[in-house]
Image 1 (cartoon, rainbow over the protein chains, first blue to last red):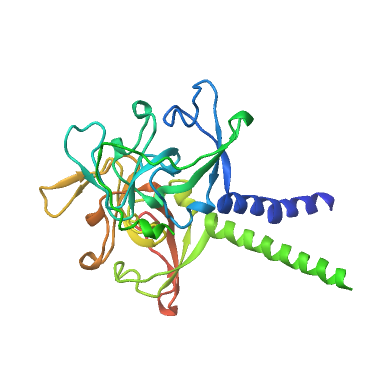
Image 2 (spheres, chains in turn yellow, orange; image 1 turned 90 degrees about the horizontal axis):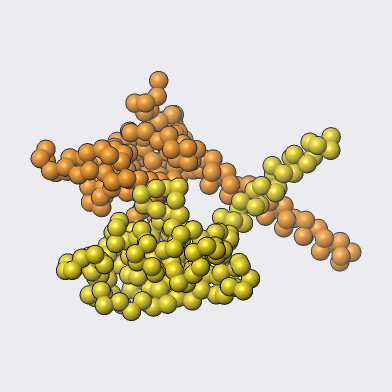
Length: 172
Length: 156
């Protein structure tokens, strides 16, 4: 009788509440790889843990410079962590092109890792749909001495050909 | 007396939260109801048809060519689109005429509406990442006269 109660309680209370909380509010994830150095994983040997705020990403409103986690367009099981460089309407020159430019289509953005040499980002797969973004990375939570809020760092690239500011007021 | 009311309302709020969570998990991971709108899937689905879609084959990656799927709109995040999967990664899709074709990149699918003349789909915005797929349409429940399982070529 006791076992049955525990089983039913787990199935109808703890599992659904845990999953829903993780889905709605976010979770803590380990950052793999060097693509966001020096902001994340500055020491390649040690791993940072970041809080991925899903609540903040529900509205799909982002600004340039925010760190987001998104599903890889090449592999639905892989999650990437990148910085948003360009939004809809911006014109950007990809890093490996001397000339030529990409205009970011409606509902898309341009994401890049801070460490260009070790990053699989929009320079490889082009603009990505905002619908692939699952969360904003808002804090580093572990290790304790690295605890900090991740503020948007506005990218100051010479590769911007044009920034579209007509959509910026949608942010608020 | 007052304390009693407080305790009771806490219990009721807890129950509501619990049922909300159960419904959330069911609709997010098992099945959900979708009200179709727009002409792009005619004659398979019409505007205001109500369908049941399941998330299991999307998560287990058993979606097959010909399945009707619900997908996040790559152009308008937050919106859903209903289209048919026509090709997977590595396939070749002819666009416009028989001479021009496009390879589907890794992790992508090619979606088209059944109503070719009146559908905004991969022909316009290119291959769509598999990660944007949400679920597969399995059952039409409304209107009554169209009620029944969706028929797919892969089914026996």
